[in-house]
Length: 158
Length: 89
Image (tube, rainbow over all chains, first blue to last red; front, side, top):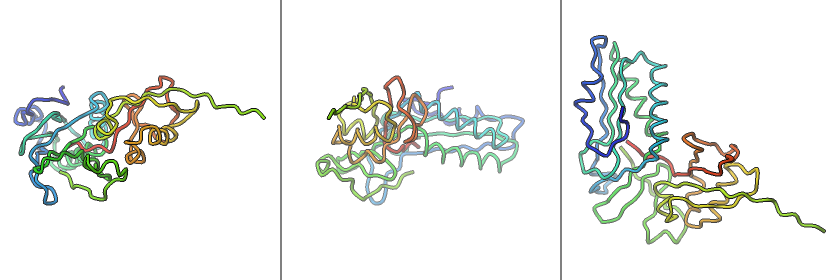
């Protein structure tokens, strides 16, 4: 199935695709583009990826989740390119016979996704600047790059 | 006294996100001593490409589609991927 796409994610169809008579639970997680981060206003986000590795890592995560929980279906899709406020950047849908497993697997999948899948978001701030989001380090604006030292600020992220 | 210089190999490093933007290139090629490991490449990148120096300590490396730790030997292909911490979602 398609794991990376430049098109809007049809999360209704994605949710439908994991429903099953064998399951009593479907959990859907949507990551959406947030306007405010620590008081700074976002206009839009741009997502970049290393596609081959991203798809390999997503497949690994699904396999690991299936080892830990009795999951019927797993769908994971991430959008790339430019996304406007409120748009869906990532969708994870899982189905399982019982809700606890579906909730736990969904939570684990998005947490691990954000830690290991090589995809990056770039903030396009309302003040006209752009900034790659790299947890643990700051991407100094262009005018301060010559100083050669990372700035101590760190943006929170969805 | 004879001074022998260590043979060097060429490694091409494919960059993403802030690393690519700072370097102004999708791929940078650096020279490292033979039998170097990822940890050595990390240092050489910071020294060879000054714009990447602030990121060097934070870079994640991959060989093909697998993460490579600092103690991993450089691949015979001479092709490595490097990027700052990921932020999908």
